[in-house]
Every structure is written in C-alpha cells, then in structure tokens.
Amino acid sequence: MIEGAKSIGVRAATIALVGASISIGNFLSSLIHSMAQSPSLAKQSFDYAILGFALTEAIALFAPMMAFLISFVFRSHKKS
Image 1 (cartoon, rainbow, N blue to C red):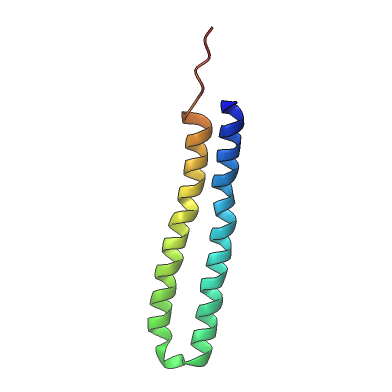
Image 2 (image 1 turned 135 degrees about the vertical axis):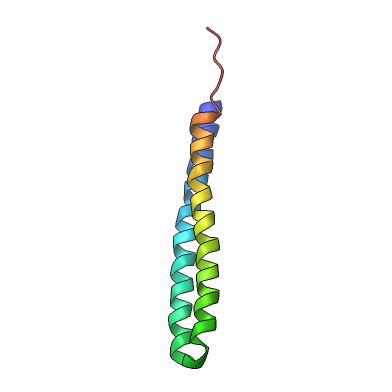
C-alpha cells in the first residue's frame, strides 16, 4: 500500500517537469513577441523574461528533488 502511494507521489512530482518546460517555452515565446513589437523595451523585457525563467527553473529543480525524497528517503519500515 505504501509502495503504491510512493509511486503515485513520484509520478506526480515528475509531472511538474512537463509544466515547467511548457512555461519556459511560453516565457521565451513572449520575449520574442515583445521584442518584435517594441524594440525600445527590449532590455526591460529581457530582464523580466530572465526572472520568470529563473523562477520556473527553480520549480523544475524542486520537482525531481521531491521525487527523490519520496522514493529514497521515505522508506517503509518492514518488520523482520
């Protein structure tokens, strides 16, 4: 029972990587569109895009960390 719950938890944590990769694509796509529409604001747009990219990448790094914690640290204690 506990092993099944751990498996579901690990899978749910790794699904966050898909969302993070989609978000990074959206940030870069929005950056390209905003630079094409107003080149005068390119520096400010780039700064905001890098901030969004960094925050999204942090979430993408926390997801595998939680998956490893769930799968390796929280071990079930079996009685011998």
